[in-house]
Length: 199
Image (cartoon, helix red, strand yellow):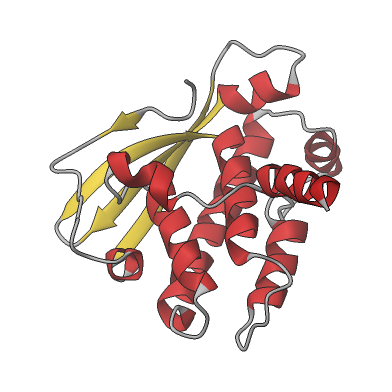
């Protein structure tokens, strides 16, 4: 499946006895490049799968490369929003983070020229828009890592965010992915509909 391919250099760091926040403590991510595959179609999902970002994940003296499609980043957005569980009583900054992720995750502040801005609005992927998204996603990952390292003890939802991000960066055991994954927003919506219907 596009966007899930991994290219590993050295040893993939699978720390079974460490929590997700501990795994992210010394992790750094660099988006090395963005490639546009030639199998572009009129389908938006297919086009999102054709845009591939190569991430280099550093942890201590080890590193590994992970390929993620544009669609995989959109799935990351959904998983982060689901992990935040909007509506919970929070002494930290979850409500503001949820609002920021929902509104700004896939809306770069830098648009380049008017043509690039229009292509982004129309969800058209070109070399120019992909470079804009590369810089935007790099800033997003840097900010998330910084925030989670600083704030993860202030709300238990941040531990769930750490699990989501660690899974995205392939820092967790692949066999534990299903257990760590929070319900997506669509899954929760379906469950709410079922529970309401049963009342």
